[in-house]
Length: 250
Ligand SMILES: [Zn+2]
Image 1 (cartoon, protein in one colour):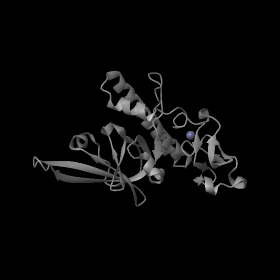
Image 2 (cartoon, protein in one colour):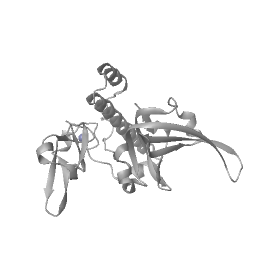
Image 3 (cartoon, helix red, strand yellow):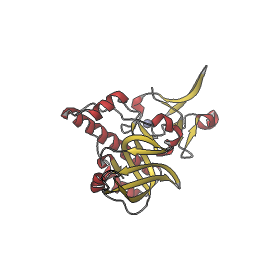
Image 4 (spheres, protein in one colour):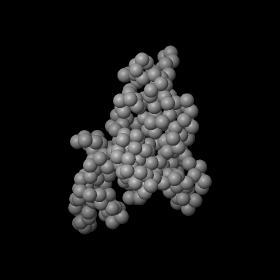
């Protein structure tokens, strides 16, 4: 049974933490913070801090990470390190589908939040792809909303995961020099912020820059989903991506 620390309160369109839950107000009016669809309820047990839970995995939307089982960290790392062709295909399937699930939810949630209807219909027909589930078992890769990233920072460091949400994205180019060969090379830094607040960055290598399709300068409120390894650089989060294919924009 999936459990949660926050629940989406539809009437005010905001998340409610456990400490702010009030029976009179929120009872039967809270939902999964990711798909906004599965009803949640509060669970209070002796000697356990209260938490939210949904009744079943199937109450969530198929695109929600809580709909099915997670792949274990060990199995995910094994797939990433494997040179076996079948493993590579399975990994590609998992990453693509999990990223697409996040993008689909962004589209859907935007519709709920009343983006102009014409706009959403257009977006849905061009971007929302049906997840192909017949090839491999569709395990979930852990996914974290950019808004919740810093709150659980320590838990995420050195893990592969998907970060998704809406961000202001700034792109900066740098030239660096290899200290042994003296050869100059370029890097690109993508900085993800919510409002003015720094959340994480991605550094693209010279080779990745060639495959990266630049956004319009300093894109605001851009929907995205990205898969990579979370690292801490002097307390700032950096996401290492394996390929630019793992960075998708809405
Ligand atoms: Zn859900």
